[in-house]
Image (tube, rainbow, N blue to C red; front, side, top):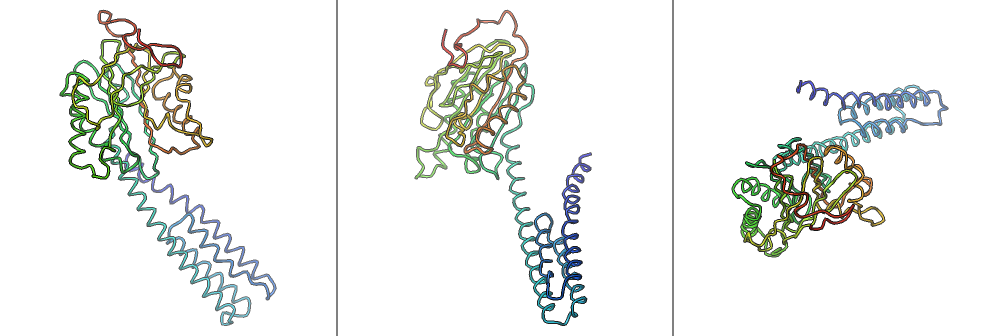
Length: 391
């Protein structure tokens, strides 16, 4: 089945280019017939070069060369009907069409080569995305999950934004972050942080110690690889979450990262956090990180994001109204929610982002054990579309 799909994928552009081949062929026939029946002082033969030029826009050098040969043959036929092939006028026209056809074929070959190179670059970028940003499963324990990544650079499918999730003994740990920079140059720092999280998430029992461990990993990397002229300029904002399977809560540490949205039916609330500085600026002790805890009930959705979302601007310079837009789709599944958010975000910016953007939607689907409920809000709450406040 996979082989058949690949064959069909390759055959589709082949069939498309051959269908379009009718256009230059018909053009050659029309020009030839009109020129043959025109007065001797009317010369339409030079227009035949349009046929290979058009072909080069949708086909490779072989088909373009084939159309060039047809155009040359058509010019020869015209010459036979208008004084013979030995006249200076027709000799010049034949040479001109031949030279221009060769030039068009050459340009078509260069374009095809560059297209293959671009396809290879995109293939490498896609492979890097799958290696670094492993696709999150649709279901992690009692959580429904969906993720979205929008790279700012056309040739990249991954950049400075990152996310990861892993199962622990009693729940799920999630990280979303944003390293300084965007596109391909930021992949190195993103790969470091993702690898460090996937290992450290199973070694530290609390989020503060996990954050401290990630800080130490980033500090070691910067010590070994940070250029002297960029000292102190490389860092990563990070949001670390721990979602127990049984307790209707979420534990969170923000290292300079935007706080998540808590979506309830018809309501979007910004969770109150006490952010620490980003990773890479010198904090190493677990006591330096504040652990925020807030309620996360069945049917509610956590929406995590990077600053590429909230800082996206429309052509007039207006920021994307993230909270207000998210509040419109609080009753949808995570996958549907991100589908709407992606379409709405790209429409707001006119189809192209200036910075990488990542979104994760997490919905709790099963009720926690009754004996483990600790209250509606431990930290969080608030009014519609506002910031959550402590109770």
